[in-house]
Length: 466
Image (cartoon, rainbow, N blue to C red; front, side, top):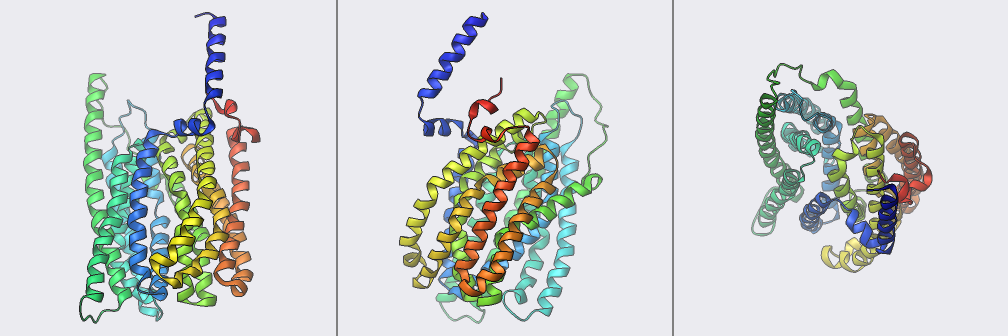
């Protein structure tokens, strides 16, 4: 083909692209794997909302205690999430002809997860023994489950690095499904006859039992897949006459600063999302925490699509070529922000109509905090893709921690003054402003490291690969 023909073809393609409506182009740009992950996320949300309704109907105090318990559990999981992300990075950047074996790496991080879970159990038991107030006095339940709960974020690192969404989706859906079954059983005990166990304890038992069961099954499945991957790789090496499998194995403790940095970064990110709950408890008690936690849960539904897009694109965002990684990140950011901005008013309208009806009139108090949260939550939808660029491409998770730390500083600092005076609405407003300030800084950091101008965020031609 001549240069003139190529130019004519490119011009024709550009004209055809320009004639396609913008929303159709956005739809076409969404990775197919993201749609599958989105379907899984919708199932998770449905199950999660069912769990929230069952718990919330026990009263705002039970819901508040449950929300704080889950926040502590999330802190535990995120603190050690670096193991799974280290494994994902090793797998995503592994060459097809590499002699590096996956199963020993997976087994190593799983053993580390169990050991760290046991250490966490000792701390949780001590806190439970010392504390008198709910839910901290019930952290012994979390201590029993801690060694198992860490298996899921660790084992799924294998599939995340391979870009395989199906097993990740199954593990993510199975956890709330098993919890919901347990809660239905607990609900029958609470309302079907006499009981001596408090409602909140039954709820927490159902939560840790369901998640622990799924964690063990997930780890077993991941080890089977890793073994099959090594077998296929060995066959490929033999066919290419590279039969040695004696290459040095990557082990996580050789890169412990990376693993620790991810854990600390993720804890900071979690506090960014959940510190307001503890502020509300400090100044207004468990009942207000219960209603505000529902507002937080509903607002974070906006991150459904953004998290799906990021998970499905995680392997490509980690591509060693900065042009490929930057282009994929920008594409994910565009999809995430446009989708959440469009969905935010719809979500608020549905919540205004449905929350008091589904959960009870007490949860009408969630609506104004929800309205305060939504602008910041919508803006922060880009954070997951930008964080994947920092962590998986640059190998610098501390950048994500700095952004989350900025958001936490702004939101917590404002919340210390706004929450005592305005309660949950003040918490929502301070969190929203923290998100907005942080995401502006995150864009700047990304553009600098990707070598892109600001207009690349809305001008597709600047991130189109040849």
